[in-house]
Image 1 (cartoon, helix red, strand yellow):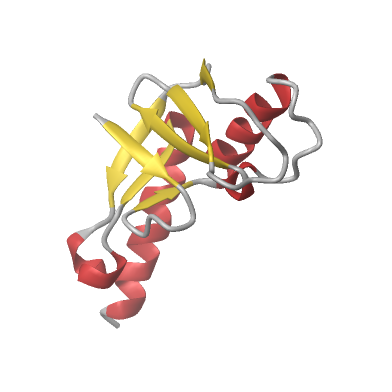
Image 2 (tube, rainbow, N blue to C red; image 1 turned 90 degrees about the vertical axis):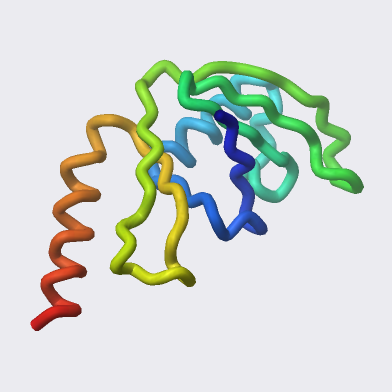
Length: 114
């Protein structure tokens, strides 16, 4: 399954390390003048870490599309049901981030129920 990750897709969230890894991939393609891929690319990512990047129509940097793969294993976590419909999304992070995410969500749950 592939997910479209962009600032306009409210149903998918990504961790800071995943965002930085995508930035690094953009820099490796030769577009190092960019400060943030979300300004110029629409990106799909799948569970294998495969990235397909397409320039956003009308971008001023005249970028070309590219495909690459992240080297670290990804996890696609659905946010917990108790967060409610408005906050429910798929959260994409690296495997090493899962314990921290679980702890964060557990703390939020405890705070809601005390």
